[in-house]
Length: 156
Image (cartoon, rainbow, N blue to C red):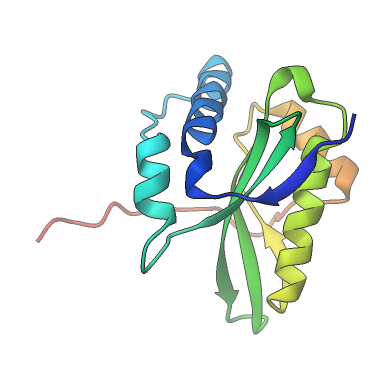
């Protein structure tokens, strides 16, 4: 089996929305209490137009989208380098352990290189040991010195 990796388009909205819903269910099953809001509609609203918030890749097998990876670029001033933030990576459960996730990550790494990025970063939900093992097999390293924080922007 060999999946095709290609750039995600607006035509992929329904498939990505369905996969995102599966991903959200998987994370809820691990105890994630997030009230997920990402759908096919938000994919189209936020991923396209004059100022897209992200870009993406899809893995396709026999014309069916079986996985996706969404990303955006950032910058690390401490090390003066461009970074790619992977914001979502999901492969349909029946297609896992067949190289699809790795192919998506390697394609994203190539995009990062082409954009003069030198590192990819992402967050993993702590109970998601399957993801941790996958990323470790790729050679990913933990960031021990940092903790991610967030601040909801106050309304005016």
